View 1 (cartoon, rainbow, N blue to C red):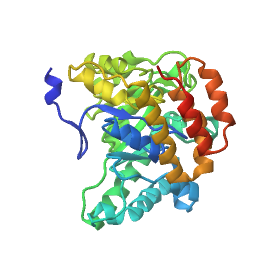
View 2: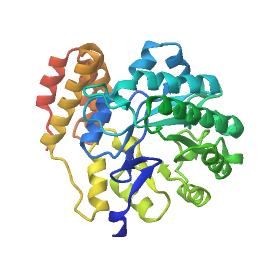
View 3: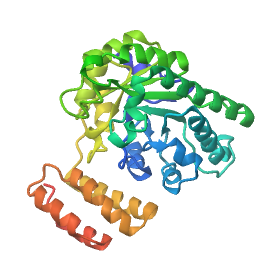
View 4: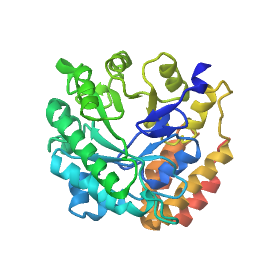
Length: 349
């Protein structure tokens, strides 16, 4: 097991192991990231944050920067298609986290890396030339990376600290005729200054249909010297470990596989280090659901937290007897007290 002595680094940032939590819009908020960190995620990502939103002072965009004590390493994922706004967003991020990044005791938390989203397939994002649309314009994509790297270097010099690494997350291409775009795209991003490349093994047109093309992901690894972070169809700890052992990538990002199962990082690390895979008990599932609710209430207030548990608790309950009926009951509840009472009635055995 030579990999047990391997060092995992993205630029100047050292990671404990190769199992990360991918950015997911509407899901990887500070509460979910904290739960994943507690279960061993080596690094998490924020939800994707609009560069324009940050620059213009949009409250919702700024809210997505929130971090919780104990989160561990977290990358701030920005999306945009204009150099000016990417540059200014990096400056805004640095201004907000100035005290933490310069080591002032008791200062707020800060992000350890900056990621640029070049993989989101959602129509309203690609319509603006952002997300996976950038794979159709690798020159612009490279300019965005350079802008972020320069801006972060300037901020770091001013604050007398090390610059945060800038990374990219993309797909293999736009559609089937150009499904191998990533083979040229990834090296270009590295040349522009990206410290790591995350690749989801589907095209934009696939969204999440079909299968992730891990053979193509592995070919990307041969084209770059910075770490390759693979993603796509990692539904179990075993899936992730097998791709790492096959040499398809340097690290992996769990996405849908972690929904309702933040233990997946602990499970993956068990397999990676040769231990039996950990399996949470029914009571541990119940406790995790309650903890998720309470953290969300503390961060967002009861009304919003209760609404958000409709999706989150649905994932935790997947596979339980009568899960569909339980999900309906969760959706009918309007208060935290109602959810707590319902939780006590669920049979996890």
